[in-house]
Length: 427
Image (cartoon, rainbow, N blue to C red; front, top):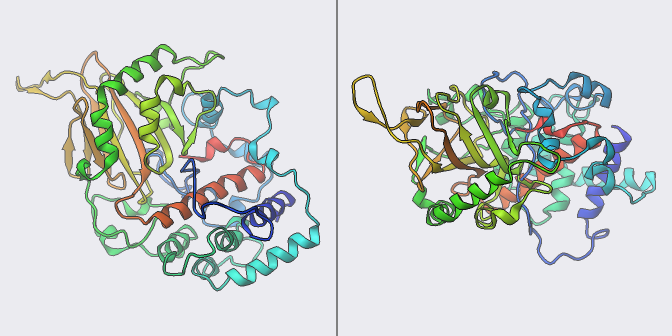
């Protein structure tokens, strides 16, 4: 285990333990929900959508313990400018002159023997928990090939959520097993021909039945978006006027190579659940407040533009813990098809069902189903407000908070390991 990883683990554990942490007013309070999510399965097809797994392969050392120079060398470019540059572009940073948050956060010094003793004691106590037993199922457990993140995860969870029972964390433990390559998928997922289960790289078992499209009326989020459509549209137009950052970068980014090649770009308001540094949120206060009413997940929330005569190719997203909601902002008018009929110009197909966007109306869907989009209008683009969020219809509040914490810690571990551009690992 590298020195930076050990320091990170000790710091996280110390700050999560009553003996080291100041009193907390709320055990599970989070101001800004969300976080990281790199694809766990490096073998996913290039047309597979924005993932949401955990970086580092199947929990082996080779995927998470290489040097910083190797990470830089092996990180592939995504899209025209490379997805590795997305986070820097969104933040409008000069990366060479700034330290990462991870570097800044570890200013407290610890005695090495104290670190090791506390880590060992916590590891022994947490080994019998549901998360500890799940990690122990890895064939690489307690070997040099074990990813240190997963090795330390039981201790991290036990100290951060000391009152969580094994039953509370039963499904989270199943997610850990799947991430380590030793879990099983539920039969309803495996047997569904519209859900490419081999592409699932972040999977919470026991979620029960689902469907391609769901009733948006179930969610307060959808109601708020529709009720405030006119305000949200005006805020979008205000953002268009300020689409370039002070450094001259276009705020509309292509978040994956697939998006870039398919004419889809996004003005990102939240990236991996984080607010974007120096983003002009004062121009979209209502939109921002509405998006923050749900636990934002590890992809994006923002305004998506689909160019005329373009579409996203068929793919699926490998995370069953998230839902996607889209509301029409600017929807192109109907077109005349080859049979002389007037039909909607823009559509989305999810599984066997096809829907069309309407201004001010929401579509709520499950992206573990194969899906694709197309805007057939010859001259007008299609704009939607897009938000990915944890499945609050099927997950408990505690499960969501634990998963948010796991994603947060995964991102911090990646930074501590020397991954130069964490943005390359997400989505």
